[in-house]
Length: 149
Image (cartoon, rainbow, N blue to C red; front, top):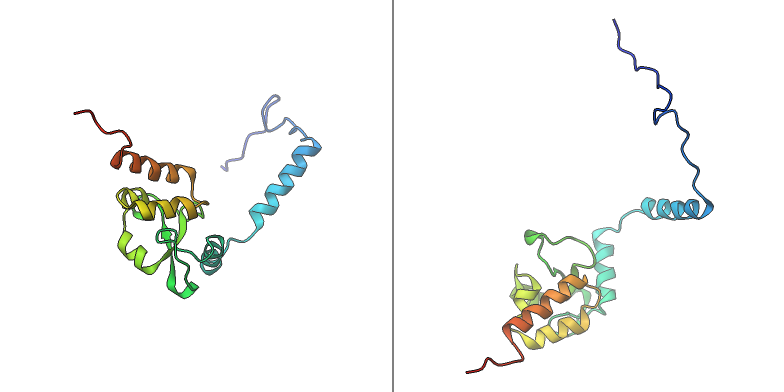
């Protein structure tokens, strides 16, 4: 005795013809297919693109370096849930990367006003939520209003 799939009944979703999308939807779908088929950038290509995007400038100290002296830094470290996207990666010199270590940028910059100013000036392509976290941590650690005595 062998099992066979039952015939679809009238009204079943499998018997209904699929609606035909309009021309605008077809163009949009075509654009998505092109984007989805594009091969992902290799690690070296991504690294070079981020260095170029940031002008070969460390977003923490603000100095420009040769590519051989730069590293990629995860604004939100991967071990804390950060991803590998361009919005979480910035150009960083080896010295600043070593100093920052595995801290999130907001924690590292909370008590370093000069480096925080550079980050907010040069790290323009980071995710807005990461920039807000840096700004908020600065307000908490350096309130503009002094408490009344």
